[in-house]
Length: 218
Image 1 (tube, rainbow, N blue to C red):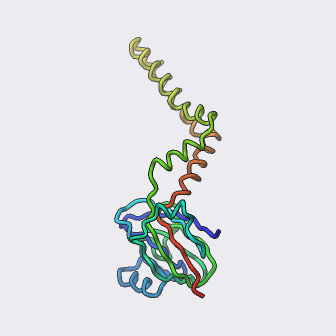
Image 2: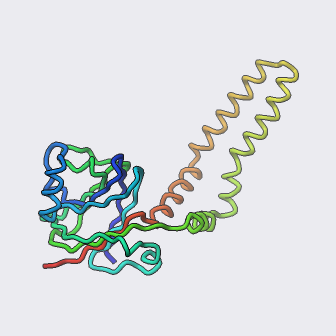
Image 3: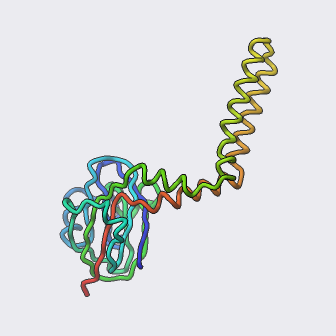
């Protein structure tokens, strides 16, 4: 299955998928956006809210049932999308210009086969409990012990702080604070912590907020 995963975000309540090669150098006005849309070089995706969005693009393939069941078909958006050189962009409407530097927070660019496509875009909403369950199911007993370390550091530090305050041992209190900060720093730099962070991110990427199907027309 041909699938592309892209991240982006908006501060103007609207995302878009578009041909990167067709973008103007500077930020376009409303007239330019309308022109790109009319030429089939951009598909507008109003979100109604600012924030981060995750896109799954399915190329000449149906959306899997376990994803489609959480898509809103009633307000799906349809249009044509021309990718003369196969470069697809996904980002907030404020990022639709050539001089914008792609980044994970606002806009990402990807590559698909060059061609003419019929596009259908859906909003997707997965229950929080579904994502949370997937996260918990992926954590091993050893990982759970590792994740408990910050709580243990905090409990021990608070207990020692209480003792030093009662004894008015201010130097010792400072040592406790520094030791706690150092312990937390080591925890977040630990390879296991990084591995768990990457694992959590890979799970999050399974649950898009926007789904687009592209079907070749030529």
